[in-house]
Image (cartoon, rainbow, N blue to C red):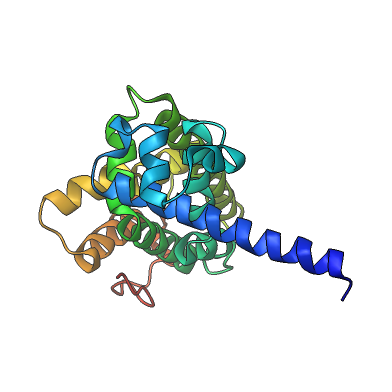
Length: 217
């Protein structure tokens, strides 16, 4: 390997590790409920780097929150969600969509609770929440469209109505309400899946079972 290529690769590896340290610091501060009041200097101190080094990777607080978005994008539950909305079995598609949504909210709850909590006053947090809602809506539009195309929606429930119901069933706010009511992830998933089947699917597409292959954490 040419010496120049080796140097570039080494710098790239070191740069990636620095970026990971910065994102790790942001996640820690969020989990502690301290990120909203933290300065860029405090993030750099937590990551063990100079402020100038942080600015080489992230130009603003908005960029730091964007980095958190990148970690969400590789969450296994979110990756699975993008596939299960296309399952040919409508009941399985609905069940697994709800189950993976719960898994995602649960796995990222310490971070999300802080971001959603300050979204009204923190532009960076608001931007993340808005983009997350847009992404979720896009996936649920695919599911609603597939359920309609398969002829599996209840009488009187069109694609638009199905989307509205799916948005409520899979929202972070719904997840938090049920968690605060004392439901475990398993209980929460079971309740939402049963509600989704009742509200959305016609009788012929409902097997009447519990949550099938769901494995809430």
